[in-house]
Length: 532
Image (cartoon, rainbow, N blue to C red; front, side, top):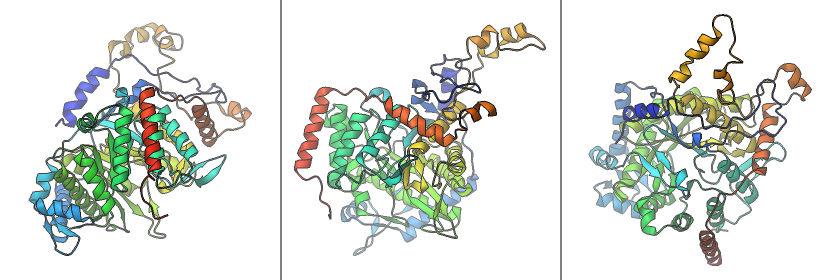
C-alpha cells in the first residue's frame, strides 16, 4: 500500500518543467467578458495529485482516543443491522448477534481484522479508459452534486427536477475535465416513475458521459440493473466487470448506530461483485450525533468501521472507501450548517482516521446558502480547503451543491468548477526548471526595466497564469459600461454556452443497441415494485 510520502516525490519530478497543455481562455482587465468564453477543458485536470502534506488536526493521542472510543461503542453498545441476511453473515463471522433483536456487537479484534482486509488504493474504471480514476493515496477525484430533490437556475427559479434538468446537469459534468465522475442523479427527475427511473437515468449516464458513475442502493433489483447497465456500457463480460471495479454506491448509516435493509443489501450485492462501496455516516452534531465534534467523530468512526468490516465479511479485498460527513446544526433552528469551522475540523480529523486504517477517504464540498452569493462561495471554499488539508481522495458534491444539498444549481455548478480548477492549479508543483528560473530574462531587463516585451514573456503570456471562468478583471469604467455584470450573470451565461457546445462522447452502435434493448425489456417487465 503506497503512502503519501511514496507518491508525491515522483509526481513532482514528473510534472516539474512539463510543457503546458492547458488552453487559456481570453480575458483579463481589458478582456470582453460578454463574448463566448469557455472555461478550460483539458487533459490537465483529468488526474490531480495533492502535493500538500495533510494537516494534522488531531494529536496522536487524540486520534487514538477517538479510535479506541469507537471500538468501545461497537463492543459495548453495538449497531442495529436491520437485515436478517446481514445478521446471519455477521453471526457466522464471529459477531455477537443478540437473538430476537437487530442489535449486533462486534469485538474490536474482529473489527480490526476485517478492516485490515480492505485493499487501500484502487482503480475505478470508466467506459472510456482515459477516464479511469485512481482512488486513494495522493489522488483527488471530484464528483458532481448528487441526490438533490430540486434544481435551480436564475431564469427558471427553484423547481422539482425533471429528466431534462437531469440530462442538462449530466452534460455539464461531461463538459469539464475537473469533474471526474457523476456522483448519482444530480437532481431527482420526478417526471420519471420511480419503478423505472433508475433504468432511464443509468442509461442516460452511459450515453451522455463516458465517466464513472454511481448506483443507488435502494433494493436488490436496482443494484442488479445498475450492474448490468455498466457492464453493457463498457462492452465487457461479467467476469471482466468483477475484475475491474466500474460502479460505486454510497452507503449511509441511518445514524445513530443503525444500518437499514436497503443499504445492507447494497453492500451485499456490490461487494460480492467487487464493486466500490463508499461507507459514509451522515452525522450532524447536536441532532443525530453528540453535540461535541469529538463525540460526533466517535460515532462517525464507529458507524464507518462497522460498515467497512461488513463489506470485507461479504468479500475480503472488495474496494471500499472510508467516508466522513459530520457537520453541525444551527442550535437556534435545528437546520444543518455546512462550510463551518466545525465542518472543517470534522473533515480534517476524518482524513486522519481514514489514513490510520490505510483507506481512501471520501468527503464533500458543501454549503448552506440558498442562492449564488458570498455565502455560497465562502462556505464552499472553506469546505474545499478542509478537503485538501484533510487529504480527501473522493470528493462528493464537488460542483453544484446548494441549500444544504436540497438544490442542484446550474450557476453554482460553474462557480464550483472555477474554484475546483483554482485548487488544482494551486496543487500543481511549482516549476523550477532553468527556463522557469528566467535568468536570461532577468539579465535582459536588468534594473528598472519591465518584462512585457521580453521573449520569455511573449512565449508564455497566454499560458502563464490561470484564467478564471468567472472573475471579472476589467477596470471599473469598462465594467460599468458593460452593465456592471455580477458573478451570477457570468455563471448564468457560461452554463448556457457550455450546454450549447456540448458533444456526446462516442458510443459504439452495438453497445447502444444492446443498452436500448435492455432498457426496453426491463420497462416491459415493470421495472421494480413501488408503493405507488
